Image: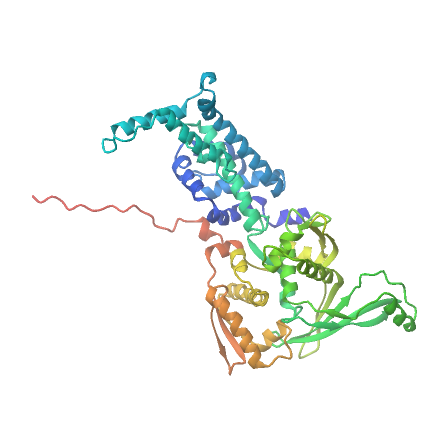
Length: 538
């Protein structure tokens, strides 16, 4: 499986791509450090010779912040997982600060025992400041001594040392450090910040700068718009008791009709059955309830989050492990989940493990069988409240979907800005249409009400009610300029014409349409403004 992933694209290109997104989250003080102390100075050449040239497939000068970010994250994540890497570089920061602060500390706490090589930066700073203060005639009241100036600056720098979030290169006397120290300190700062950004904003994976959702689940009406139940029927097939539910749907736009069979696997090891007479006895003995909750929009949200936990690092793992509390917070958008939330998550995860789908698609006109596919969700699930963790194994279909990139995706920030699971569901349906239209050099599409009714499993709802629901959710997307630029109902309100938002340059990178917009700046004219002086009059 790893070979398949590697063959899709070079691993470094992934780091280059995500570096474009990381840049927007980097601490402004680090950006300032780069432009003032790294770019165009000796530390830049040190970084180029000792980092960029060894990792970057096509190194060049001048070095950009994206180059450094890509190389740093590549080095860090080639050695260990992201959580471990963050701990490593956080410890490196602590040690750097301790060592850089040591000479400053000696000037205050043990001036008589200072090492001969101590540069006495604090005293030189205080003496210079004292001299400036004495030359300032406008303020004759300042009688602060050199020792007091040293003490104030020492206390300020001690706060920097103790602040676990403050970069190493925020060191006040950074310009006095050797070139190697400045360069390595900046590399550690950029690496740690990049790793934290990946963990916080990109689901802990270099693949996680967009939210992914299996395209097969977008194409088929799997999820009910509203919470509802399904009635399962017991069937005896080759001495095995099967519980299933069947429903059909039409897709007039593609001229097909589908039949979906949902198989329910109870949490019990059922015995072999040889006759229909024993079915009732088994049903009573194992307390099997044939009425089960249908997958709804909240389940879709859970599937989205689970699918985004699959990445190159977890593909070969037997189980994927998640933090139960954080997962529940994310699903319900609350800080402190209650018991009812944990119970609901457990029930929904169990449902995903217990359901299997078989989808049959036929040509509506001829009845010709076009496709039959099976869809499993979770192969394994274990929830530990004591350890605050849950383990799951995604189905083989999910893994293949991830590896073959058969998923719909949308930028994380846009996805997180939508609260309603129903709005998110419609957004993901439309996102797939938006990306398809972009490939076809189009920016709009007319979708029938039947299209939405089928995809949202709202077969019984009237047109007026459906229009009201669509208007509500499409208005939210339009207001936030996510996927939908404008929309209006057409053809006597039997369809809706949607004008999609244009793809931003970072979306072109994320969805791998075109990266030249961000990489090639040769077509941009950038010249300094020069004021033209009039020639002197003769």
